[in-house]
Length: 145
Image 1 (cartoon, one colour):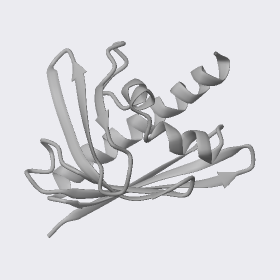
Image 2 (image 1 turned 30 degrees about the horizontal axis):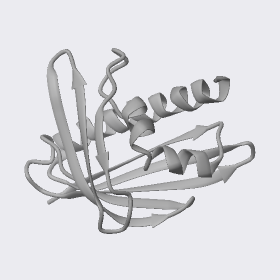
Image 3 (image 1 turned 30 degrees about the vertical axis):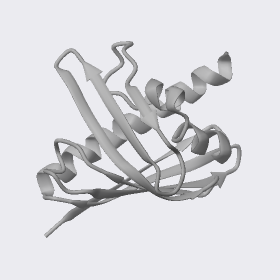
Image 4 (image 1 turned 90 degrees about the vertical axis):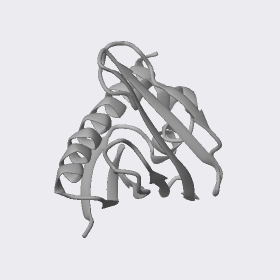
């Protein structure tokens, strides 16, 4: 049996800007990290269908590596990729991110499936919730710059 989680957040930025922040290695390094310690993640990405990525999140406890392959890239509506990390216990889970324009912002929804169990689902729900908050703060910082 597998588990799934869905988290969403409305962010005051265009769907195009938000979508691009999920594929640009420099942007990913800033918002997709384990904490706000100031240490960006190390990101290698080939953002095309069939291309792969590697995100190494670094914090005071060490490194956490996430790898996968892009399955759908439909700018600026949908992004889907496989996801493997220490919490997926050697299986490729699947992440689908949608971007729905909403007035002067966009609702970003992350739907993560094929998680091995409820414990992994809980970890990923907390993680994606935190990451969407960090994405929002990063986008706000980019607006101010």
